[in-house]
Length: 338
Ligand code: PEP
Ligand code: MN
Image 1 (spheres, rainbow, N blue to C red):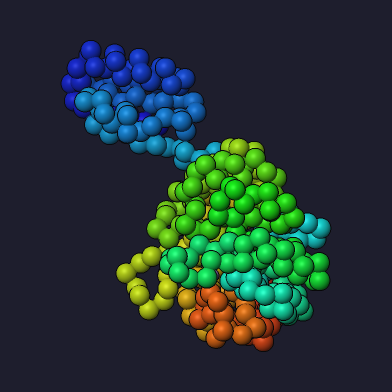
Image 2: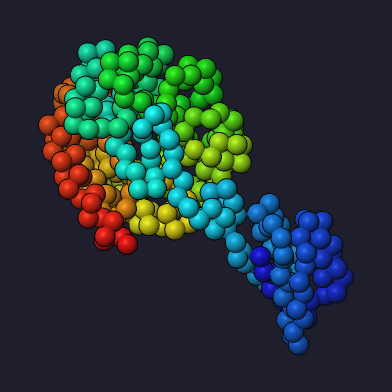
């Protein structure tokens, strides 16, 4: 971190600033120019609040040189993290994972039928919401504990590991047999939740908030990792922009950007990005070509009757066709992105 002082800084205030900085456990490197003084901070500055330094009247500007995230930072961990989800299912480091299933678990028949269909097409994991974050309190809120039970039935029937959203810590005890815990876009900055799930050893699928920067997403991953859990999968699921035609805007740049900044796997959710079923395949293929480590896609056996997100859900035959196309792209992208 570099602190640039105003011209002819008052010496009493300069001493007060030096005193405060020394208490932050960093070494100061001071270069005094004819008019301006620059202080370089050497050591771990990730805990230092830049805004407090700016409060000193003599400070002109403060610049971070290092990102404030350490565990998630590629600089300290150059190799890709590979998150292992049960035997044989990996995300990251060249392993492309496809997570598919309905937005919400609705009934035993529905979840088993979709699970069997996506498994047949080659999905690696089954998704399905039991606890649903809905904009309206009058919309279907999910089958909750019963939904989790049905997901576990689908896991038993197909062998597919399951991915489902945890909305509140009070639900955690029910998640013992869940393979991947999803933290949804709306909870990305629920820091208490992040700290607590950081204490468990299950893989966490962390979705980017609707209006959050890459750094904010990585700081949320950092919360989980700083509590001990290194198994974090990042997910870009579309952000809010001025465009209203699509539900959100898929930020394809998030793939190379997050993979530059971090060693964590990055997957794409084309369904919540688009909100329109026929856009799901093209967005998935774009994400695959751009180097994503996987996709999470909503598949429903009867989208027009879905209790949640039917308009963006693809059918099993469309999913099957998408899988064929993804398998065509995967061998080429290594060459493209090399
Ligand atoms: C979901 O995956 O069904 C979901 C609600 O996602 P998001 O948190 O990205 O909106
Ligand atoms: Mn959904």
